Image (cartoon, rainbow, N blue to C red; front, side, top):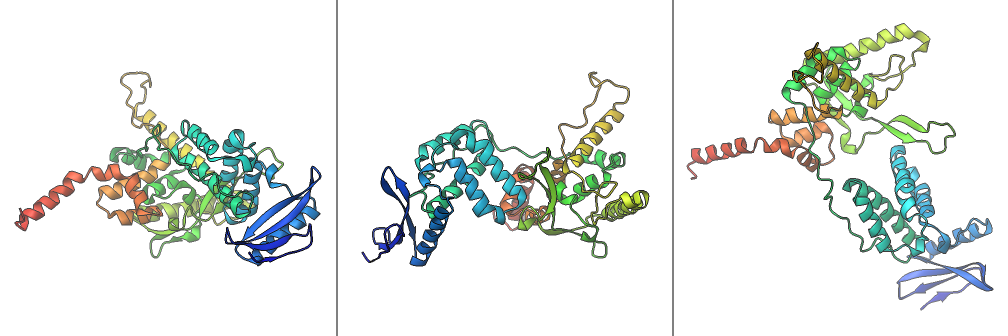
Length: 412
């Protein structure tokens, strides 16, 4: 073992052959009449020196916390603030912090970090799996896993307690089949869209499959009437301003798209798209004239009447009201409780418009890869998994094509 010593209490650096790492020991104070030391590891002497100097600076500023006293909840928040906050979107930060404060802290947050074990994490995840969807439990586990991995890097833990932890299958929450409008329902929406104050947003979703957050984030400059395309490169997200002192901490902002693949260019599939988009631009100009100085200067294609960024949920509310209105007009004079009352729609939401576009594309025989690109999915597998039930409808038809081909080529 080679070593390079320093004076007592100032820290010592040496190479530990058993771990194949450089090692440092720093005195963190006196406990029960004895010196308490912190051991640090690194791949190089320089790395160890930097870690050692950082701890020594914390000790001098009295901000150093003995690793044995760090609670799980405190480390998770420290990890989030120090290693993640500047590298993730505000909406992602909100999701991580909510996971830490609402899910992890009440259950295992007050356990000392160095006493946390795989059994406790496994029991915690198993309990969560009883009431939450597997995708939610996976997100919780990801936060725990990555934060504890950083704790190992920081020499707070020797090894991660996540080793040996397994994720249970989603038995109680089977995959949900997405719901799309039928052709008859879609025709009713298109024919009666003029009854809604969000008619253009609803029709745009039907004709492009865009997410509501993407639609309300569009700028007028994103529309290319010459080449008949729409550029999608933004998304509206909600996040919580945890530092705010106001009663309402929820904020909205236009950010980048959900994933890199979500940035895309969508062609006009119909001249109706051009008509409704030009109609929306005309509405904006009229509102600017009407409200004058009260109208907020904006590039948004779908702002509120006074130029503000609208709330995504308002589109869904408009769509639900439109479906209710169409149904009431169809059953005019008939009580909803009557046996004669015809229920035209089931449970609806604005995301159905996106699913309806995808379903119509597949029904028309569009290549699944093209559909995936138009929807902005990061992987084609997402499209296949989401719309597998639609593809199954054409299984017999596609098999018949192969049968006819084999007969034609006399391969039977």
